[in-house]
Image (cartoon, rainbow over all chains, first blue to last red; front, side, top):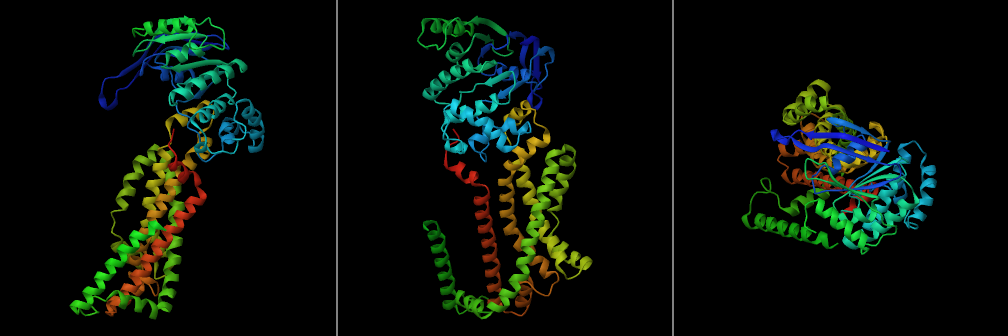
Length: 240
Length: 253
């Protein structure tokens, strides 16, 4: 379970400019094995929130309690000199696994994630969707109880993004983890989250906490998803 | 092959103009030899040129190797230590302002006519571009990638070996390619300051004997050697780091 209580975080301004207040008095809890989607406008402190959960930053005020979390950054950032298989096994290698043992561990996941036949491919030989799947696998195989996903599909085209949302929904159903998914796409939040948290513009704090009671797999045309999307947009101050 | 054609044509045209000018103006070949004079000198003196090229070639290759190893080590030191970066980097830049023409005779005075002062001069000339480009490679690693590895509990040393060092290798090669060109100039200065053989030494002798065509032939050999080194390093880079070349061909997303 993740417990964030009254967290504030301010960054020193660049070149003597005004300090930037990213988060102010933000509180939220995420239950174990729950998927929480955090939506908000650009620059509302979403990435800061993930870095606090991952322990990459400390709050100026308040407290962050979280089990160890592994990050999936916005871009895939696969290492161009490694094969897809070795990229996915990066966390295992860091943890001290021998090369072959890491590959043996990753191999079955390639079959499950529809990456069979691409084990030896270099990142530049993979499509955007495949690269994102390898990147997700890399974070998943770090074996941390919490996954911190930072706009994982923002860099993809609309069609690939829709495919990947369906894919991630299935993957998370099979592999229960506590997930914090940050996105600026309200529909993505409604499709993937057990709950949708809406952050205010900077300084970010939670302005709406919406439960998503829709069975998976969800359709984006499902009236409940559409309605939830409208509520989230309203909370963001966007006329739906 | 197509890529070779424009520079080859341009060279032929330039040589043609040069040849015509020498022939038409009747300028003394001691002042300006024609391209055919230079070619004749290249053929007639091939034994001497080859012998001296061996000396200079060994100096240059060893000098670049020393600079590459030292440059990589210093770049890593500067990357890891903010104190070192702030205190040593300005000194490194300043060291490049020391004219090699002044330094080379001093080194000969201190260390004699042997190989060592040449290696020092060449390594000194090559060291700086290698440090700058390698350090650049080390410092442009995506911050998000470093963060990702931190959430994998990667130590500083692990992150260096798995991500930062491989990322810096293209920079190391770029530095070495620049060094290949600078090294030739360094070798000439070092040999002119005091030596018994080498192309720089030969250049010194032929110029003072007014053997202008022979001097030009020596320069041609030096230039050809620099191009050869550059091409070999480019080839080695493609073999060692195939992803650098392949990545440029495909869009990043």
